[in-house]
Image (cartoon, rainbow, N blue to C red; front, top):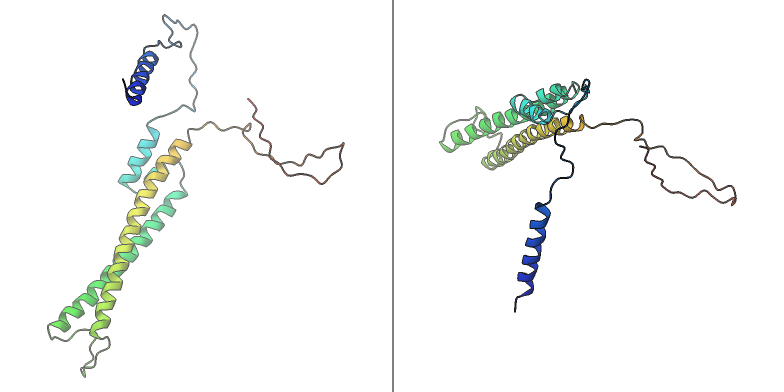
Length: 196
Protein backbone atom coordinates (compact mmCIF):
# COMPACT_ATOMS: atom_id res chain seq x y z
CA UNK A 1 0.00 0.00 0.00
CA UNK A 2 1.22 3.48 -0.83
CA UNK A 3 2.14 5.73 2.00
CA UNK A 4 0.40 9.04 2.61
CA UNK A 5 3.47 11.02 1.53
CA UNK A 6 3.59 9.26 -1.86
CA UNK A 7 -0.13 9.81 -2.47
CA UNK A 8 0.21 13.48 -1.55
CA UNK A 9 3.22 13.85 -3.86
CA UNK A 10 1.35 12.29 -6.79
CA UNK A 11 -1.70 14.48 -6.13
CA UNK A 12 0.38 17.68 -6.00
CA UNK A 13 2.23 16.66 -9.18
CA UNK A 14 -1.01 16.16 -11.13
CA UNK A 15 -2.40 19.47 -9.87
CA UNK A 16 0.79 21.29 -10.86
CA UNK A 17 0.75 19.75 -14.33
CA UNK A 18 -2.89 20.66 -14.89
CA UNK A 19 -2.34 24.24 -13.68
CA UNK A 20 0.69 24.80 -15.88
CA UNK A 21 -1.03 23.25 -18.92
CA UNK A 22 -3.81 25.86 -19.05
CA UNK A 23 -3.71 28.58 -21.68
CA UNK A 24 -3.59 32.23 -20.78
CA UNK A 25 -7.03 33.74 -21.33
CA UNK A 26 -5.64 37.28 -21.71
CA UNK A 27 -3.61 36.44 -24.82
CA UNK A 28 -4.82 38.43 -27.81
CA UNK A 29 -3.88 37.52 -31.37
CA UNK A 30 -3.99 39.79 -34.43
CA UNK A 31 -4.75 42.97 -32.53
CA UNK A 32 -4.72 46.14 -34.63
CA UNK A 33 -4.70 49.58 -33.03
CA UNK A 34 -6.24 52.52 -34.85
CA UNK A 35 -5.09 56.02 -34.01
CA UNK A 36 -2.18 57.26 -31.94
CA UNK A 37 -0.89 55.68 -28.79
CA UNK A 38 -0.37 58.16 -25.98
CA UNK A 39 2.53 57.51 -23.66
CA UNK A 40 2.13 58.75 -20.12
CA UNK A 41 5.02 60.92 -18.95
CA UNK A 42 4.93 59.17 -15.55
CA UNK A 43 6.03 55.84 -16.97
CA UNK A 44 7.38 52.97 -15.00
CA UNK A 45 11.14 52.57 -15.36
CA UNK A 46 12.17 49.17 -13.99
CA UNK A 47 15.87 50.06 -14.17
CA UNK A 48 15.53 53.21 -12.08
CA UNK A 49 16.11 51.48 -8.69
CA UNK A 50 19.16 49.62 -9.97
CA UNK A 51 20.59 52.84 -11.44
CA UNK A 52 20.09 54.65 -8.14
CA UNK A 53 21.77 51.81 -6.24
CA UNK A 54 24.65 51.73 -8.73
CA UNK A 55 25.19 55.49 -8.48
CA UNK A 56 25.14 55.31 -4.69
CA UNK A 57 27.67 52.49 -4.74
CA UNK A 58 30.00 54.51 -6.98
CA UNK A 59 29.75 57.74 -4.96
CA UNK A 60 27.74 57.92 -1.74
CA UNK A 61 24.88 60.39 -2.12
CA UNK A 62 24.82 60.24 -5.92
CA UNK A 63 21.83 57.86 -5.90
CA UNK A 64 19.89 60.35 -3.79
CA UNK A 65 20.76 63.09 -6.29
CA UNK A 66 19.64 60.77 -9.14
CA UNK A 67 16.28 60.39 -7.33
CA UNK A 68 16.06 64.21 -7.14
CA UNK A 69 16.13 64.10 -3.34
CA UNK A 70 18.92 66.65 -3.14
CA UNK A 71 18.56 67.31 0.59
CA UNK A 72 19.50 63.70 1.40
CA UNK A 73 22.96 63.89 -0.18
CA UNK A 74 24.45 66.22 2.50
CA UNK A 75 22.93 63.99 5.19
CA UNK A 76 24.68 60.97 3.65
CA UNK A 77 27.95 62.87 3.30
CA UNK A 78 27.72 64.16 6.87
CA UNK A 79 27.00 60.72 8.33
CA UNK A 80 29.76 59.00 6.41
CA UNK A 81 32.21 61.88 6.90
CA UNK A 82 31.65 61.85 10.65
CA UNK A 83 32.24 58.12 10.95
CA UNK A 84 35.33 58.34 8.71
CA UNK A 85 36.64 61.23 10.84
CA UNK A 86 36.26 59.16 14.02
CA UNK A 87 37.92 56.19 12.32
CA UNK A 88 40.95 58.26 11.31
CA UNK A 89 41.16 59.99 14.71
CA UNK A 90 40.98 56.71 16.64
CA UNK A 91 43.49 55.12 14.26
CA UNK A 92 45.98 57.97 14.75
CA UNK A 93 45.61 57.85 18.52
CA UNK A 94 45.93 54.05 18.51
CA UNK A 95 49.15 54.28 16.50
CA UNK A 96 50.45 56.96 18.87
CA UNK A 97 49.87 54.80 21.96
CA UNK A 98 51.11 51.69 20.15
CA UNK A 99 54.38 53.43 19.23
CA UNK A 100 54.82 54.63 22.83
CA UNK A 101 54.20 51.09 24.10
CA UNK A 102 56.76 49.61 21.68
CA UNK A 103 59.35 52.22 22.63
CA UNK A 104 58.80 51.61 26.35
CA UNK A 105 59.06 47.83 25.89
CA UNK A 106 62.36 48.37 24.03
CA UNK A 107 63.68 50.45 26.92
CA UNK A 108 63.61 53.74 25.01
CA UNK A 109 62.02 57.02 26.01
CA UNK A 110 58.49 57.61 24.71
CA UNK A 111 56.27 60.71 24.58
CA UNK A 112 54.54 59.76 27.84
CA UNK A 113 57.77 59.82 29.85
CA UNK A 114 59.05 63.07 31.41
CA UNK A 115 62.65 64.27 31.17
CA UNK A 116 63.24 63.23 34.79
CA UNK A 117 62.09 59.66 34.00
CA UNK A 118 58.66 59.78 35.64
CA UNK A 119 55.83 58.14 33.71
CA UNK A 120 52.72 60.11 32.72
CA UNK A 121 50.93 56.90 31.73
CA UNK A 122 51.76 53.48 33.14
CA UNK A 123 52.39 50.39 31.06
CA UNK A 124 48.92 49.06 31.90
CA UNK A 125 47.47 52.46 30.95
CA UNK A 126 49.12 52.21 27.52
CA UNK A 127 47.73 48.70 27.03
CA UNK A 128 44.25 49.78 28.12
CA UNK A 129 44.34 52.85 25.84
CA UNK A 130 45.34 50.67 22.88
CA UNK A 131 42.47 48.25 23.50
CA UNK A 132 39.95 51.06 23.83
CA UNK A 133 41.18 52.96 20.78
CA UNK A 134 41.32 49.81 18.67
CA UNK A 135 37.76 48.95 19.67
CA UNK A 136 36.59 52.49 18.85
CA UNK A 137 38.45 52.41 15.53
CA UNK A 138 36.84 49.12 14.54
CA UNK A 139 33.41 50.37 15.59
CA UNK A 140 33.89 53.51 13.48
CA UNK A 141 34.83 51.38 10.49
CA UNK A 142 31.76 49.21 11.00
CA UNK A 143 29.58 52.33 11.30
CA UNK A 144 31.01 53.68 8.04
CA UNK A 145 30.26 50.38 6.30
CA UNK A 146 26.69 50.33 7.68
CA UNK A 147 26.08 53.92 6.51
CA UNK A 148 27.46 53.03 3.08
CA UNK A 149 25.13 50.03 2.72
CA UNK A 150 22.14 51.90 4.13
CA UNK A 151 22.50 54.80 1.68
CA UNK A 152 22.59 52.32 -1.23
CA UNK A 153 19.46 50.57 0.04
CA UNK A 154 17.75 53.92 0.70
CA UNK A 155 18.43 55.14 -2.85
CA UNK A 156 17.07 51.93 -4.35
CA UNK A 157 13.95 51.85 -2.16
CA UNK A 158 13.30 55.53 -2.79
CA UNK A 159 13.52 54.94 -6.55
CA UNK A 160 10.96 52.14 -6.18
CA UNK A 161 8.64 54.33 -4.13
CA UNK A 162 8.84 57.22 -6.60
CA UNK A 163 7.15 55.01 -9.19
CA UNK A 164 4.00 54.43 -7.16
CA UNK A 165 0.86 56.18 -8.31
CA UNK A 166 -0.44 58.26 -5.44
CA UNK A 167 -3.44 60.53 -5.67
CA UNK A 168 -5.93 62.29 -3.40
CA UNK A 169 -8.34 59.36 -3.34
CA UNK A 170 -5.93 57.63 -0.99
CA UNK A 171 -6.41 59.82 2.07
CA UNK A 172 -6.94 59.41 5.76
CA UNK A 173 -9.40 61.82 7.32
CA UNK A 174 -10.52 61.12 10.89
CA UNK A 175 -13.99 62.28 11.88
CA UNK A 176 -16.41 61.92 14.78
CA UNK A 177 -19.80 60.51 13.82
CA UNK A 178 -22.50 60.75 16.42
CA UNK A 179 -25.68 58.72 16.51
CA UNK A 180 -28.68 61.12 16.38
CA UNK A 181 -31.08 58.55 17.82
CA UNK A 182 -29.11 57.63 20.91
CA UNK A 183 -27.33 60.48 22.65
CA UNK A 184 -24.35 58.74 24.18
CA UNK A 185 -20.71 59.45 24.58
CA UNK A 186 -19.05 59.17 21.14
CA UNK A 187 -17.40 55.81 20.57
CA UNK A 188 -14.00 55.48 19.02
CA UNK A 189 -13.73 53.44 15.85
CA UNK A 190 -12.00 53.20 12.53
CA UNK A 191 -13.60 53.27 9.12
CA UNK A 192 -11.70 52.67 5.91
CA UNK A 193 -13.28 53.95 2.72
CA UNK A 194 -11.88 53.14 -0.71
CA UNK A 195 -12.87 55.30 -3.68
CA UNK A 196 -12.16 54.03 -7.17
